[in-house]
Length: 304
Image 1 (cartoon, rainbow, N blue to C red):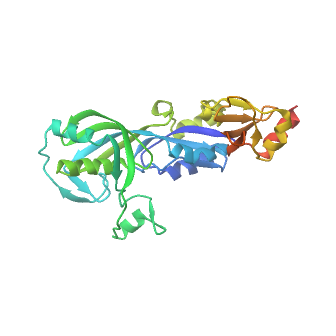
Image 2 (image 1 turned 120 degrees about the horizontal axis):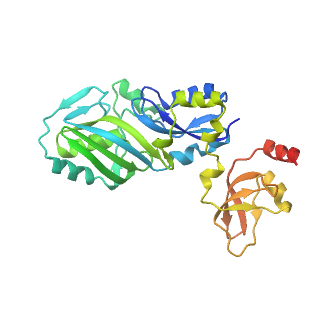
Image 3 (image 1 turned 180 degrees about the vertical axis):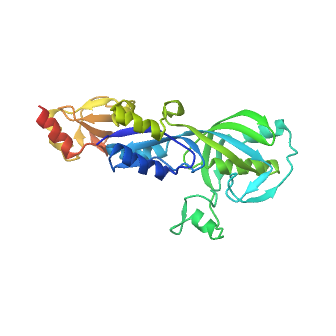
């Protein structure tokens, strides 16, 4: 089984679940999970977690993401993107300067109301399911952050811009809100995700490319290991006396004068256990996320 993360380029027309299903067939393994949905009509970076790496799904979902979007001013739709039913059309009378000023005003912390056409749940039912039934429910505004917005071109009614934002941000809704603030309405014409944390679009692979690489036998060259995801945390190799504690998922005593707050924990034989955090009060490292399995210890023992 392959363990780690692969940087997939999700093509238009695929859902994130489609990508996972196809990868299961290509890689011949079941334990695969994606790191946050990307709309079927959107394209771009979709990190996919494999094997033990599936424990990283929630971690990557929380990371910053960068998108390139095309805003179409003058049109409002029920889905907030160009694929939806047109609700209103308005003339675009604002100037380029007004558009630029408006877009930049969204920088920083904002409160965003999620769209009805989204996978968020209300009383156990997904919003888009309710929307398809013609039911609209009240949605609470959620805090989001726009860390950077760069306007690449303005050719009204179209605006191309890139945005780096926090988790849970809807770029469709940003386009809608910009149009609303300008008074002419707006929707998202196109969306490309160019980065998720360290995963960049330049290094992403289409499913057809992954299939060819697997056939050639070089797939491991394109897999980022779980350990590499935590490069910023120093490695800590426990003493042999604590190996049993690690195997059982227990905390490990640490009497160092200046221990690191967070480490990559290894058994004395070199088996990577997981990520541990230091508890100053108890002077011990406690497990945050454990990635090893009993089979890892057995394989190491057999190789010695």
